[in-house]
Length: 233
Image (cartoon, rainbow, N blue to C red; front, side, top):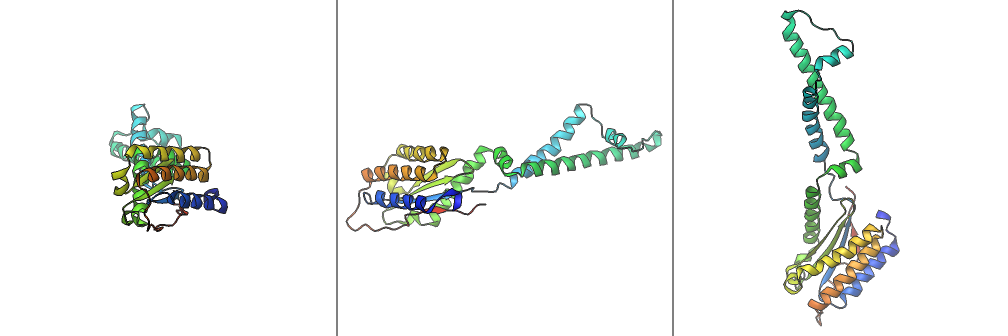
């Protein structure tokens, strides 16, 4: 089962959503993403930065391209008339050094844990928020009858959680209360207990919704109760 979730875990989350929605006219939808993006630009950005900075820094530190030529047994040029050849050789060596640095850094930063560690937090936050909004819109939480859909979204690799409530909820419940839902989910994720985190977050969301969006006599379940697990990037 994905992310170590068992059928019992999935049933617990679905039951928690069903129970929470009995007391409110709101709709709760849960999504778990192993990783929202592969961040392909991160290895390329670090490789380009290293290729530009490291060789230049080495020059300022006293390194000269012709040192590599001598190191690997190349011929030195002693005649003044061969100065152009010496410059061309130095430039070729410098460019080769840049290429080697680019390839090595790109390969190292492509290792998933390294790539995630070196991806700026602001970029990860933006990607998680975008992925959460895509799920909110893609599953129709914005078109529930009373605009009372609530998305609880967790991105494991990014260690980020998003809770998005539709305008009907925001009009009734203060924004600050959703921080409690986030805190409950994060607490479970930090312990490695994904199901417990979602169950606690759903229960908290249900309590908030019950206080601000009471059920209607003709309420119907507009969204699936179970946890949606996205494929790994």
